[in-house]
Structure formats: structure tokens, C-alpha cells
Length: 115
Length: 112
Image (cartoon, each protein chain N blue to C red):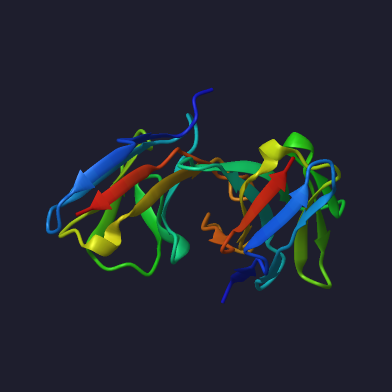
């Protein structure tokens, strides 16, 4: 069964400091990997994805993610956090071996960046 | 390019009633998926449609149903509403299996 784990419900960082939001997965084969962000009472907004190639993926708003196949991890990072980055972050995977589009999500990590 | 549009944004219904939610995908996207988001269960997959056919279904009771029209617009229906159906319902569309899904703003359903 496919599963995604975000081990931290909450991450708190000071503005200007680097941030990391962790994600590990358990999926058969080599999945597609995604990060989404959600602001209050809004839908999910796409940040970045890993399909193939370079293990370091760059996305929107200065975010990047590092794919580690041996550790089955896909951690989200940003070198310098902004207060406006405060939001709920979701890691998601999709089965590459299927033609289906279903996404499996982690439980989400609430990121708070304080001034 | 217009994004995914969901209507209505907010709904209040009474237990036992039924409700229909609508989703218009991004132009050219033929795959539409629905998710339920609650604080307790997180994001749960409801179903996926492609070219008017349901391709995949999550673990929800038969009270939850959906359909897709020839223009790729999709609707989901929940009959005999229960208090536990209160949630944010999200629709997503995508172009190909390897591409990202784009989400609508969601419909906030409250069952009283």
C-alpha cells in the first residue's frame, strides 16, 4: 500500500533562517513526488515535483526539494524563510506504474515563520 | 489560462439532504479527481474521472457519487448527508499522468 509520512505536525523557524519540512514515502516502484502548499480556506497550490533526473528540484517561491531514493525521502527546503511562507505543506506521491492520477498525501506540516 | 473552478464555495445543508458540487477543470485537462479534506482524516481520495469514465474510487460509501461530462466538467453528489460529511471538498485536474494536479479553491460543506 502506498503511504506518505510527514513526521512533524508543526515546524517553527525564525524569518531569515533555513527551513526543512520532511517527507518520507513507502510506494512500490519509483513514484512521482510533489509538494503542495495550502493557505487558510484555500485549495492546494503546487510548489514543485520530482519526475526524473537531478535529485535537487527547484520550485516556486524559492523552495527546493531533495530526492533521496535510498532513504525514500523528499524533503522540502528553503534557504531563507519568510513570514509569508507560513502555511500548511503537503507531500504527495503518485504511482508511476499506473495510468491513474490518484495522489497519496501526507498528513501535512504546519509551518510557522516568526518575525 | 483559467484555473480549476469549483462552485459553490460554501454550502450549509441539513442532515438527510443531498448536495451536488461542481468542478470545471483547466481547459484541455481530461482527468478530474475529487478529495475530501477534514482535520481528523486529512486529504482523502474520493474518485477520479477521465473522458467521462470513473477510473478509480476511494474508500467512501455509495452515498458519494460523481460523474463527468463530455466537456470534462465534473460533479459530485452526496446523498443522505451526515454530520461527518462536513469537510472541504477539493477538485483537481491534470493533463498527463506525470504532470502536477491543479486544485480548485474547494467547496466548504457544513452539515447541520
